[in-house]
Image (tube, helix red, strand yellow):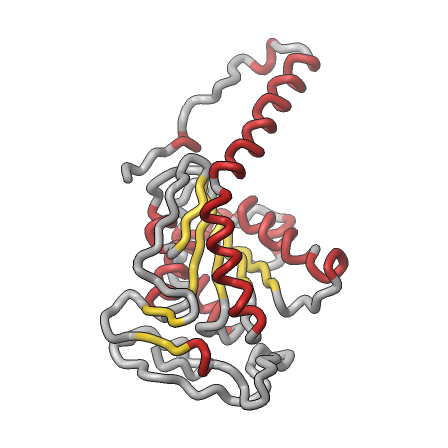
Length: 247
């Protein structure tokens, strides 16, 4: 699909300084109405993603949101609402933003330019094949997000992306794509209980990535309660250096 830079298009609302308060509010409301329509079109992708995530989380997997700037802040905001709203521990859904907590209140434009930083931060949290990484990038061109999803794909980790620009680079690194104009689910021949990475012969048996008691519970440092044996890891080339994946 051709990369459409919708976020870079001229505004549909010009000469804002000449409009009345009422006209400005009506214009904002008109744009807000488009959100529900966009989400409706993306329901097939969202449904497939949820159905893929649930069995992984039941076995101890987590969800990581990854983004920069406003996109990153929204991910952190959503993750922070999980404990008070749903009564779940804050270790199940984790929001990562380029530049860390400082970037939540202060613009750190250069923080998003590293294609390796996001992956390193995931590795610091012992990301593994039971986890899901969702990249959020309005433009779909953020190196921090693209690089992390690229490494995750090669590590056999389920990825998804949220973007406003169809066919963007970030969408090419996701097994499941969510954007406001795409309605087709893209599968990349990925089976969600037995996951196949980007390279031939590189696979994980997710059923075996569980502790011996079947609880899949994690310790505070992100490690599983009991070491989890892995199946054939041949063909991998990306090693976190922390979680023993040997990818």
